[in-house]
Length: 338
Image (cartoon, rainbow, N blue to C red; front, side):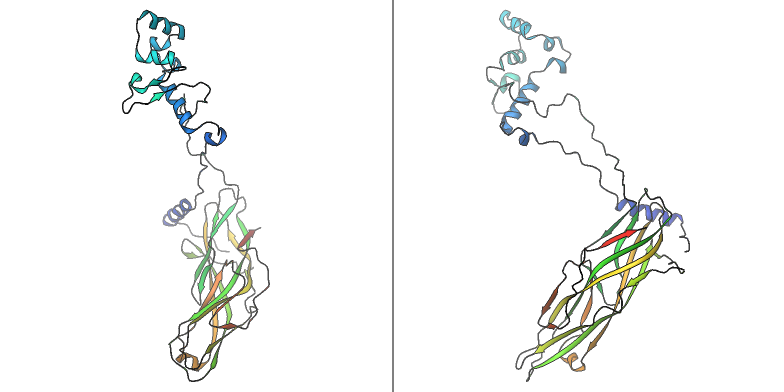
């Protein structure tokens, strides 16, 4: 397999895409005290914290007044020396409610009570630094895709993105992936009125499936000695659809879906250097058989395939799908490598 050419523009583009797929850092999620101690209300916990802040705890201040013991402050109060509002509050707040005006708090006056039985919550003596945690990605690669990827007939569509992480050890891997596929179709009516009852029959079949792998917008050369395998391709059933036109009634539009089974791709050989990002694309080619008379009654049928679709049954609106839905089980999109 040919090597991938790397220039500065390519490296910068890949770096940008890597940043888009960066895993989010671990979020700091502190415990909720209101759930842990339900017997205390938010008002009680907030009051306890306010009282602690206004008490000017000695360990939070280097002033001589705030460093005095409780007995020393009480002696000052009795003697009338060095008395201030803060000292008075500190001595008596444990037992006597004090108005906020006594502590110089502006605004409407409320009464503060320092209840030592209430836990002191959210009162930090030291500020913790919660920086971004470096999260190690253990997976050697990651993939990114969506549910119900809509692939129209003959239109190149990205199925998933494969990101190679820094923990990769081997220089290359063989990848296998699978996706459940569901045929969809629809047609708009021309609203003509019939003088008889009659049916139109449509047949839709997957005639070809091709794949391309892109690195930075350029196709990656595939391994010619051991090419990848897509299965099944021609083994998917032909879907027969019947729509009915009733006498003296305008024709109505129709649409539907049918689960066809699981598409498997194996032996997809790719270089796996750390930081590589690949886009894997699929193209479905559908063959459609339509009665010539139906063109007057309906516009051309629009059809395609849903990949990664969780709907694995039959949906039919104003039509009958005679083909039976596949009973093949699926786990959705899945990829592995070796």
